[in-house]
Image (cartoon, rainbow, N blue to C red; front, top):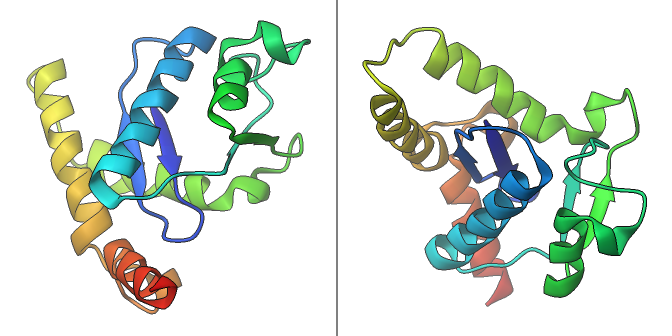
Length: 150
């Protein structure tokens, strides 16, 4: 599974992936960026990942994930090793999805899990009130930020 979380609003996109190879995660990132642009009408100027080999190689131009970032004009930042706090918002998402989606549910099939993941993400982004945002939804936060930018 992989996820992309917007640092400002905390809106999150996630998918269940077949593996964590560099090419798989590069295509996931392309779908994620497209989703944020189509649904919420904004683009990223930077992304942060851990230091895994699926995200970076020895030479930037030889790695598919880094190449995609360069070609899209997106800065690729990496977390400090052994410092999960640097990526705290996505780490919080992983705890929440485990506690509220995977642990209490069982799924009849992979397709059933994917369908329910979509429902969970809608509720997570649009309906679930979050303590870190004064009990507002992430979508509420997006609307406030958007109003400030007008």
